[in-house]
Length: 154
Image (cartoon, rainbow, N blue to C red; front, side, top):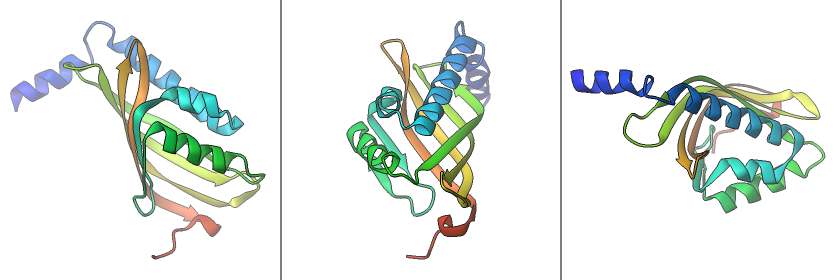
């Protein structure tokens, strides 16, 4: 238990930790901008090849960068697009490997119908590949909604 606490404390203090956290926050901001503008290449640039997304309503799994890019491409080409913003509350860096966990809040809304929205909490695992931080896994949980975005029982 004490060793785990020491490792956790060391993770936020290793040389370069502050820079790594800034880079991850910058990547998250770039991802948010890419979603807002429908920039599919920019979305793809933040995702690891093995990226997985677990949806916030029925835990639908989208596995792999190609599958996620296809999903974003389809959703963002519509006239009424779904816009999501993730806001990190905490980023914890591993003292052992080039990876980090991000946790925070998310909100999504229909670009043409502000009454249709959902929000909640999320966690994301990042890994550094060749000097660049990429999302490997994101898991979302819906905690509030409005209009047509409220989940229907399956």
